[in-house]
Length: 162
Image (cartoon, rainbow, N blue to C red):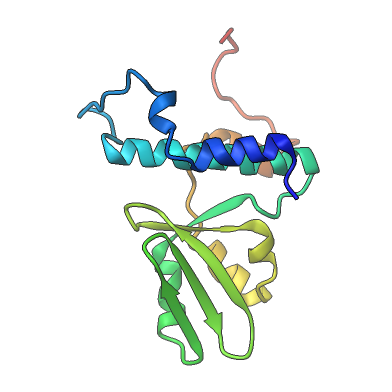
């Protein structure tokens, strides 16, 4: 059973009243997302924030999404014993008699995403394959390098107030 806050979050993130949240919204043609795509991105961001908030509150990263090039699926299309099915925005890859993985499909169909917990249930070789197709959302290359080598020194410019 969902708590009151969770119900409100779900209702706000999935209901058709989003236009009430953006009363002065008018699509701009110079933005990467405009019109229906902008609204679709706004809805995705809203739901994603709920996923992140719940993951952080519970200390459980299982539903945090990792993103991949759609080419990650090519290996499974070419290998007997696997099936891939999809709707407009969701897909599933299944190994006959074995594992299955559900994934989301981005609106432009250039990337897919799956939950960390679901990916951890894949066999080691498959997790390695998926890691080779990982894509980064807008990120700081330097910060990511710093996380990989936390005791190293990195020159990233002068310190300044934000």
